[in-house]
Length: 628
Image (cartoon, rainbow, N blue to C red; front, top):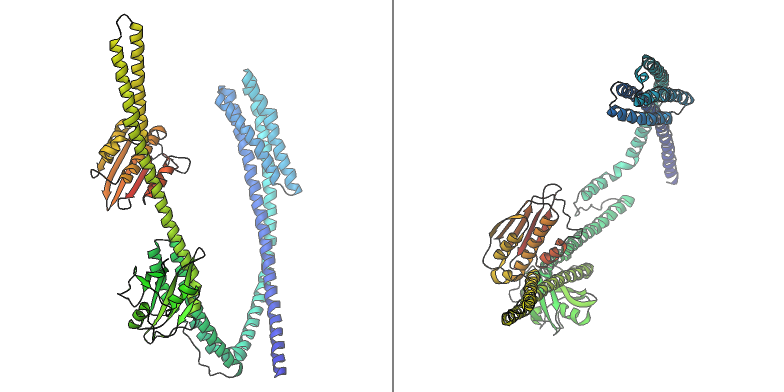
């Protein structure tokens, strides 16, 4: 037995070594070939870049000469500007060309091209341009033109030398690469053929000695991997094969349980993350827990301060006597009562002899066992989740562990949902308190300060009429006092309108928005399909949103027309403000709409701003009427 094992190991090692040699050689040759091809491609790319840079030098030189001659003939400064641009570009192109040179030959040839083009620019073209600027007729003489032709011809000669040299280098490189590729191809084919032969030999050897005994196990494993977690193997094998079958069945059973548990916990975590009201979250969570544990019914209760409990979620085996929302008393002979008293997980193996009302109801519904686990919120015992085994269904032995694995998520769900509700209620209270304070300030200004100022103005006016005509200065001063008082009254009215417009309180949203439109510096088209009155917080929020939108359109958007639309649909107020301004508004950059968004969201509404650049701004607000 030992010798057989040793022989098999030696043969496998030898076969593996042969396989490694053939495969390693083939891949090494392939890597060398790839590296050489990459280097060839890189050098060819560099040559093409060199050609392109040389063409740029030639083009800019021709442009320089054309601009020089045009300026010398016409004196038009536009050609002088073109000459300057071409000169700058020529200098940059020469620098780029010399930077691309990597060999001594390339450096020598590119340097010669740069010197020839620079010599033309500095010794021929620049003096001709300067002479043309002075009005010297020699700038367009035949000698200048001939010298320019000579220098350009020299540049073309230098460029041709560079191109021919590079073409020869590329051709020689391609010839060498082709020869190398042929040799490497032969080596690769030989390596691949040898590797294939070695793989075939090793594969055949393994198939004959190892594969046949475990083929059935592989087929069953495929079914398990495909999702058939209930797959089990008949344990009929001997020795190692028998142990493999038994290990496979144990692994499949553990995997089935683990996958089911993780899937249920993932669904529970997803429900918690999505939020919602505590009732919505717990109703979905209790169903997942019932299915996770594998029982026929599940309940979640919240412990109250007086020792009772409230059913907050239920799944399976409906109990008309104790529906969701029912308040019940828990006895010591129930698993939930034990959790309430001890804060620890509890199991009831039977309801026989139980006297608590909840236990009697559970027995009447067909439950014969229950397991309950505590739910903690913020470190305090909040309630419990209980599962019931119904009819002939057995209670899983690990029901406690399955429930405990999910109770932290339930506590998180309850805490998150309660925090969300508390925050929404707090924001609503702040908004309502602020609106009420605005109304009170407006009433105080209107009924107090404004009326006192009006009364004071009347008193001063009456005193003015009693002053003798022989005292015109005093009458004039009293008139100025009355004018000042009237101006102060106007200021108070304007302030009170900004704090809380009286027309909104007295007439409702429709006349208030029409009054805003009349006061706007931009033409406003108003189309409102509203009832006479809406809930106060909704009217206030809509009013200030429209006021802010009109102010922004007039101040920043350069708009010429604004459309205001409002209607009540499906229990919601839908308000839309659209302008034809410049657009590009960003509510996140200090806009007054940020505070209004808080107000709208506190009332359970939504606000959306669509402001593409150059296409105006569209503001849409939706406010639920029932939320308030």
